[in-house]
Image (cartoon, rainbow, N blue to C red; front, side, top):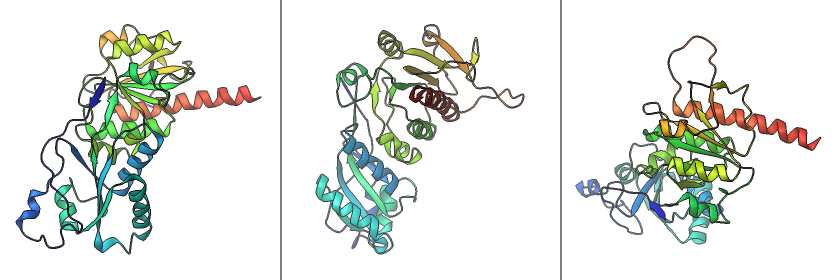
Length: 297
């Protein structure tokens, strides 16, 4: 089973030199995403897409890249790089102006570079598990299941931290997680495009990982142990919930351990999902780095 990103609105069309003679109201018809095409703004997002394609974790295709003609000299390195990548991956590199780029993106932080790409498909966890090109079936892996994170920026920040912490793969619930893929890519600094991602029902995912000898650890407060006292050695499946809904009771009831993040002072508030995922992921990285060092000795 493959889960596709879903998009809305309209995107039109292509010329060799976009926007050069289009200074009238027609420019307003060029809006962001269509059912088949997704707009990504900025070199960081585009670099993430290219790395994801090269690594085999993403089947997204780059269709067109628009470059602000007034920034070619200032960004000659990026322009030369994209020219080479266009030949490798078969997309067109087209000159345009800032007005056009502003019109087809959300915000104006594209830096003069915008990519139009195909949708990305996400395999079911069972299919990903059988794939030799994806790391979900590693015997000593560190995977993260995200449940209930709704804000695309928070989602992107979470993926950025998980990628930096060396997470092997991310499991998401079967919903339209990437309805704003461009926003997620930008807020994750391109990490969302480089992380292997699979789709699964949380309870079914837990069952699959438990059969493979993974311990199931949820982030939470009730009946919890401090993350500093918990054994967080791999193989491990970490589950992090969103601020509003948190982790469902059906998942909490079957996990092996609930771990909490101890605060430095009395504070009744909760951390954002991105912050909690960051702290826990790097503690897991820390504990396993120590283990690897001891094994070498």
